[in-house]
Length: 503
Image (cartoon, rainbow, N blue to C red; front, top):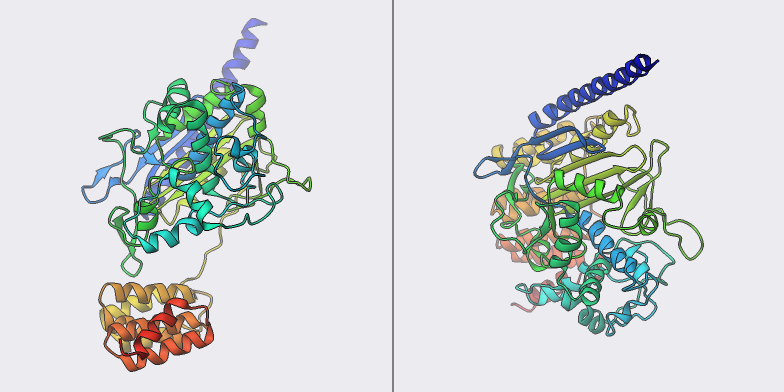
């Protein structure tokens, strides 16, 4: 009898080993394709419990030096940081240092919203203005401004903005709420947020390569984030050099709580295991974090997204699936994508970290899930038409206006293979203009006015190109048409007033 039991256990273990090997092989095939096509650049890790089924670094940690990724590459994980902020608050609740239904003004007395509670901030049901709404006007007035968490409450007071809705009545993703939570952690604990995370989260979980951005100097494993500089050239530039995202990568870079945790794939697995084993938080509050938040009408907050139907708990998305008990969060920072998925029933963990905003990141996440679960939970996306404007602009730049017009005329009716998008053409034209390809920019933006004559923005952009090319009279005509179509175009109205006044 013992030998039979032993044989059965051995068969079970061997079948699992075989299954793990099969999945690893399938994942390797997937990432070979994504690597060759340059559709993923980063790290992937898949685990069953504490056993790593598959881990692979893909591409470069630094593009300019061709420094390759390793399994210890450390990434900014964007909004996955919110799970750590939520954990810190829940730890303080466990120690009776605060209650989730406490008004936030108990800890931040100058906050002008007295009905807001800690729970509202944790569940994204606060109705607060977000960081762009709050700070973009200040950044426009002072382009060198460095926004800090300490500036949030004074900015809310001076802006005098009402809440968008009664707290608890609606769900709307909000970064400012988690920045306020980080301030609450500091106020209650008496420690800086960086120190708190290190002492109460990273060390207990064994996360030796994780820290809050700015608290560790000279981390040789930390990678550089990249994004597309010229869409018409498909080249990449580091976020530090990019003017497009300067407001996020420079002006608002110091905001912590909603973002700014740096971590590795291996450390995030340790985080998942520590949560499962209640090493960081007791079972009651852990379950509270992973329970769908109920709005004031009794309905669950259901912020469906790219990865299917999901509810929201306290700092976590809760995907709806009969495949397991899923908790997850994604992160997006300029230059970085993060996918952190954990199944609390089967203890499967999927982690993908990308530092080039790769076009195949979503595909990589979904296909990884399908392989791990041996399912088609995420249906393969059907072949999509290609952009018509992208090759048009490339031909325009290399071969001139006539060749580009010929190409466009030949393919503009082929909606099976090509799509056209007003915003894309406008952005491509403005990219050409910013790079001083004035004649090409004029052609592209002129085409925008011809294809989209009902859009005030096309005339505004074409007017900008005309003005920079010295064609003042034509620029006035375009700005005038733009403002007539949309009187709310205040920057265009100001330019038009200056031009007509002879300035």
